[in-house]
Image 1 (cartoon, each protein chain N blue to C red):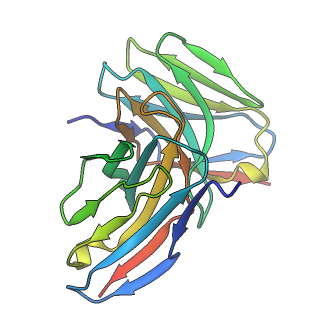
Image 2 (image 1 turned 180 degrees about the horizontal axis):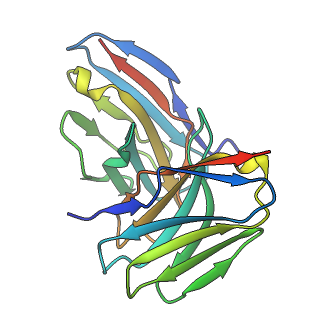
Length: 110
Length: 113
């Protein structure tokens, strides 16, 4: 069946460095992709999205890259801050259903 | 503007009991969905609705019922609770079905003894 997977369950980065979180999806019909941030005890919070007709999209300190050839997307966080510590999920959608990855926990080291 | 509101925040049930998890949104969103989140499993879709009166099954629908009589509310019913349904449940909504970021509630933490 469809799947979305994250490459690392945990990522530790030094404060001020850039973070890169990766995600792979299986369904080539997926045409919409989202990154969420989840803090402890809270629901997922939307960070940034990208449609399949794009390969890059930038937000405030975040960039999402989409490579449809290898069915891979990544989230880049510039100048990582302590407030970025959370679990990050990617999700893929092709129609009414969203398939979520298992999440990468980002730890920011002081 | 409250967004997506889930009640209760915590609940403990005994095996075989039934209960309803409430979800309400005030954003006039057409699409609503329920997920469960288990350790190491990510979010899995239980049921979703593309509008009032329309519901459909997701990835893990067994043991759960839903209805959508209004745009605002999308309750999830556990018919006969089982320990395997111990999880954190999230409700989400978006303006349209597909191609839109979903807004999530803060979850209901459910334990079945």
